Image (cartoon, rainbow, N blue to C red; front, top):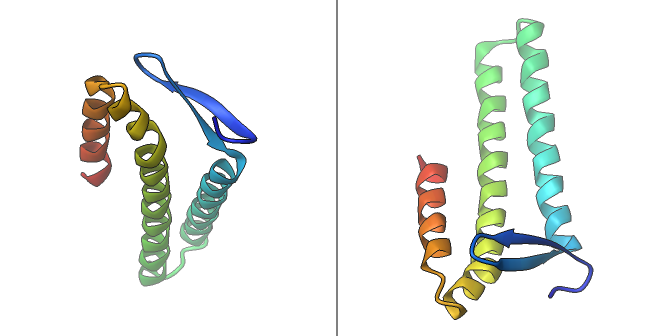
Length: 104
C-alpha cells in the first residue's frame, strides 16, 4: 500500500492504493481542463472570434489528454503491475479496451 493513499479495486479482487500526491495531480489537471472549458463557454456566450474559441478548445483537448496520460501511467505502474503479478488477464484486457476508447 502507498503511504497516505486512497484505495480502490480493479475487478478480480485488485485493491490498489494511489498516493495523495497522485490523486492531487489528477485533480489539479482536471481543474485546469474545467477552467479552459468554462472559458470556452464564456467566449461563445459573448460571441468571441471563432479562431480564439478553437484555440481554447485545443487547450481543453490538450488538458484532457495530459490528464489521461497521468491516469494511464499511474494505472500501468501500479494496478497493471499487480495484475501481471497475479496473472489477472481480465485487468489487462480492460486496460487494452480503455486505451482503445481513450485514443479514439
